[in-house]
Length: 223
Ligand SMILES: [Zn+2]
Image: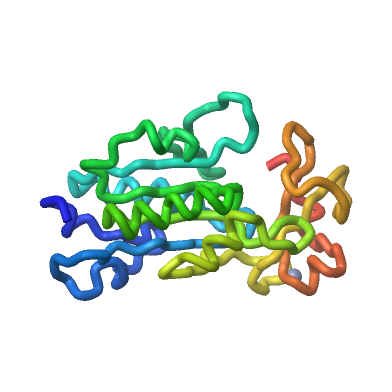
């Protein structure tokens, strides 16, 4: 393990808990790093968490590589941006082979549900072969309740799986994502909708099954 990495622990950012995992045995050794999958429904502050964890590393003088998958062929903004305004520059997962990981203390991946199985295996290699912790943030399931490819693979391969919680309008934990088009819940369509004007709302299972938007109906869905 490169010098200086031991004090760079995968913290939980704004969740605030001191992270016990990562270097459980506290000493040097091979294969100590872990692959983390932190999943949550839409609006559970996953990106804000990712940016905060990056900040915590940087504050300790550690280099972090922030990544996101390129979900279409266009070359978009290399920025991860949370709803609350926190943002950070990033690279695309597709660019990993061009990036020198020598002094990287941690890799953080936003929108990890969009990873391919092959990309997840690449991240597993970074953890196991290079002993660098990789923290992935993403959705568990799509608007139809099916696992995303990236999420399925992360659930298979991650050492540590953690849920980032948010709530439905009824106060229960929101675990499903509804796709909304013109104020109505949509059940059919492509898993990834690019350039559409649909929105997503997280609901508890019961209200997702009923398509019941409750008081969320009154929200400005464009937010
Ligand atoms: Zn509910």
